[in-house]
Amino acid sequence: MSIVVLTGAGVSAESGVQTFRGGGGLWEGYDVTEVATPEAYANDPDLVLRFYDQRRRAVSATKPNAAHVALAKLEAELGDDLLVITQNVDDLHERAGSRRVLHMHGTLNTAWCTGCDERSPITNDLLGRPACPHCGKTLLRPDVVWFGEYPYGLDRIDDALSSATTFAAIGTSGVVYPAAGFVMAAREYGASTAELNLETTGLSDLFDDSRQGPASQIVPGWVDEILNSWG
Ligand code: BV8
Image (cartoon, rainbow, N blue to C red; front, side, top):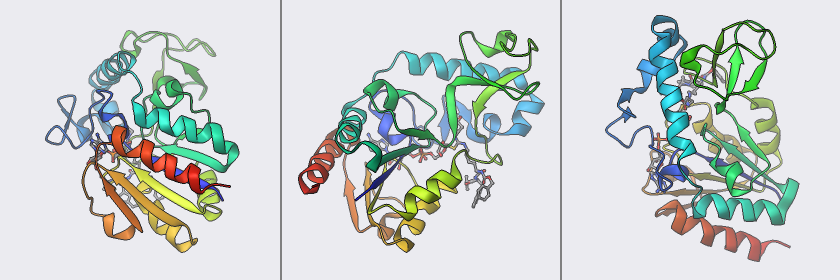
C-alpha cells in the first residue's frame, strides 16, 4: 500500500497564507498573471521580486496547522510509503515535520541564479539584488515555477502515482495543470482517490471519495482512517 498526497493553497489557508483564487482571484493584491510568469519578470523584475519578498516574509510569520501536522504524523507511520507532492511554495509541511515533500512548483526560500544555474537558500530580500553565493553575480530569481515553466519532479511524480494504492488531493482547486491531471493518472493506474477541500471543485466527480470541510478539521480524521486501515 502506498499513498500519494497532492496539496494546494487550501492546506495552508488556515495558517493565514492567502490562496490564489480565494481573494477574488487576486493574490496578495496582484493578478497572478501579473507576477507569476517569466514575461512579468522580464517586464518588471522589481515588481515580481517585491511580490515574492513580501510573500516570503508573510509566510515566515505563519505556523503549520492541524492538516500539516496530520500529514507529518502519517509520514512518521508510513515512511517511504507516503509522498507529499505540494503545489505550495511555503515551507509549512516541513515545519510541521514532513520530510518527504516534493515542491513541484518550487519554494519561496530558495533562489535560482540565472548566471550559474545554482540554487541557494534565500537569506535577504532578492529586491536588493544579493550576490549569488556560488558565482558572485547579482542574477538571483525566485526558485518558483511560473506559468509556462516546467514543474519540478514530474518523472518522480508519475513513478509514485503508478504504484500508489491511494491518491488524495487536499486543498487544491484543480485548475492548474499538470497537477490537476494527477487524479486522472491515479485512476488509470488503479489507485483509489480522495478529495479533501473546503468545497466541491470542478474535479470532484473524478474522486471516489470527496469530502468537504476545512483541512484542519477533516484531514486529521482522514489520516486516522488511513492509519486504522493500514497494516
Ligand atoms: C506547464 C508557483 C509545460 C508560483 C504556480 C495542460 C497541461 C499542461 C499545462 C497546461 C495545460 N493547460 C494549461 C496549461 C498551462 C498552465 C495552466 O495550468 N494554466 C491554468 C491557469 C489553466 N500550467 C503551467 O504553465 C505549468 N507549466 O504547463 O509547463 C508542461 C506541459 C505539459 C506537461 C508538463 C508541463 C506551470 C504551472 C505552475 C504555476 N505556478 N505556483 C507561486 O506560487 O508564486 S500555480 C499556483 O496556482 C499554485 O502553485 C497552484 O499550483 C495553482 C493552483 O492553486 P491551488 O493550490 O489549487 O489554490 P487555489 O487558490 O486555486 O485553490 C485553493 C483551494 O483550496 C480551493 O479549492 C479552495 O476551495 C480550497 N480551500 C480554501 N480554504 C481551504 C480549502 N480547502 C481546505 N481547507 C481550507 N481551509
